Image (cartoon, protein in one colour):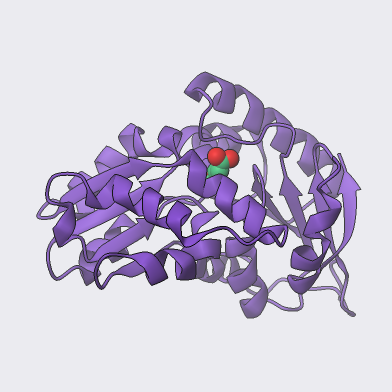
Length: 265
Ligand code: DGL
């Protein structure tokens, strides 16, 4: 028995690579298609209506073209806004990425957690709901940062960004009332785990970062349990909705994550 249907990961840019990596570590035998909606990037500064219209339509096209066995929306912004609509439209399992507020609350000693996401994510009722359900006894301080998304995109293209840029992003959390008590930060945008070391190195105090990558990997493994896989390794494909002059700069980062070929949609 062999089944070559891929697992398809979707994000606006390179952020979803932080979710692909732990999944690939758990399921190395699977074939992978990684899609970056570079023509729609960045999502975090778009309106809810734009995301809600764009993401289900695009995933419909992608499902037809690549026939995946499962889709991972490896983007908090798209998941918190459009996950239900995508699930309703597609007849296959869809795993979303939601801010890891529950594990953060379980870890926090000071009972003060930071949530770092895109502007669109941190204002979602979905986040209010997670905070109420899982962190009711914590102060939850939120900050939306388009800058950090851009920093991660640049780093993955091999352009080292200065410490001061990361310090400025963290100030958005720590400078809020009570911010000095933060001991856990939720990386509520999939781009941010890619630069968590840089953030940790300039944080004003001891802090732990949490994200949903490992949990999603376990969920994908669970949902594909007992399925057949390709008999021999299939090279991963990176798909961009727009290829421009700096897409080629991503090739080493993509290759390091098993994505050997670049295609446009
Ligand atoms: N990586 C995305 C997220 O998890 C969005 C980044 C962006 O396009 O603004 O929210």
